[in-house]
Length: 195
Image (cartoon, rainbow, N blue to C red; front, side):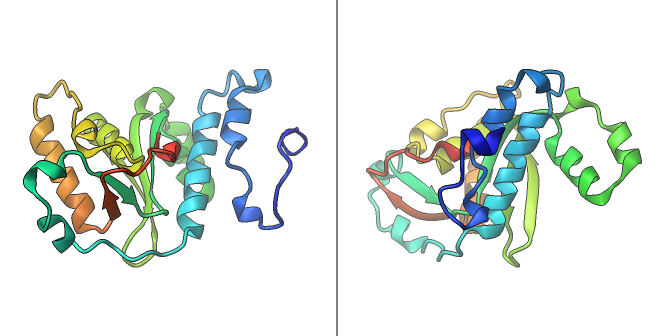
């Protein structure tokens, strides 16, 4: 049904399937399988991470040359292998249990325990990583990687009251891990893949 509604546009199959999660979410027959659309979104993010081109990281010295007032309005571009997802279930635990054919792990999964954020990326050794993030860090990271200006991306509320320190630490980690590869004052936020 999906292939009929959205046929491939190229012979390169790794480019096919981006719209599958939305298709699954709209099927009446999958309404009782609440985790399925999140699982499809995670699988697409994994596909993107594994097949994205490798790009050079940003030289932090470029940021040091900026006027302090200019930093807040900057928009950043993330590495193409990175996706941040807001999930309604522990899709990454389901995904891992299915890959490992671990029936015990599958039976122990509580669907209600997985609401939150994950980041999918390749690490420095090009190995796939799927990491859970707090709500504040996930929201900030998703917006930042989608091209939202820094000041707006950092404008996140967190009931813990610790969001400024957590967000600044997460931002520093993004820089240290080379997740941000370029910046500008006028990048369009045209890739909402992170959200």
